[in-house]
Amino acid sequence: MNSGIEILAVVATLVGMSGASVQPHAAPVQAPQIRPQTVVKYWLEPPPAPQSGVVERGKWLFRQQGCFLCHGPEGRGGVPNRNYIKDAIPRSALAQWMKLEPEDVNPLLELLTRGVRLETLAGSPPVPQFNLVLAQYRSVQELIRRGNVAGKKDPKGPNPPLNMPRWGRSLTDADLDALIAYMLSLPPAEQK
Image (cartoon, rainbow, N blue to C red; front, side, top):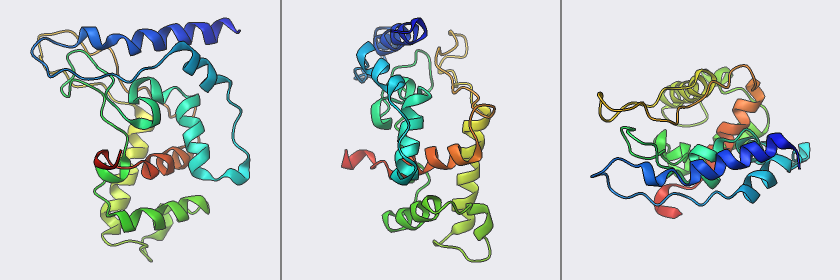
């Protein structure tokens, strides 16, 4: 086993055990179980074949880049983040976050699968309120590119240990579309 993977497995274990550091008086959050074996399996997993599709590539990137360490397996969220305004990292069900109707998700996924850049569709919107959808899509792209510092629940307390890293240098536009497609495909909380 590669020592880098071993280190990442240890980090994943520590993140998975971070539930003990949730602020007192916060509602208990059940952290997803992330085990070193899972981390190693994800990092050793080969990329999907190109014909597998953009959602499968996004799922692989989500694992390969380590997104699951904070966002939980399959984007379920729930990983505790001490002194974070939401107590835990939220789920990654992007369609729900973007307030998309279920019938609007598939046309967007189909376009992303075909490699169509959503920015080019302003003249022929594929879904209702496309300008809002496009603005939210761009917002998600920028969040992934630039990262985000977790907001503090208690301004005088410690900084939350988990922040959204900047991925702009390591992910291409096609990678961003694949990640967004995968997150769009995740079911909303009530369907999980």
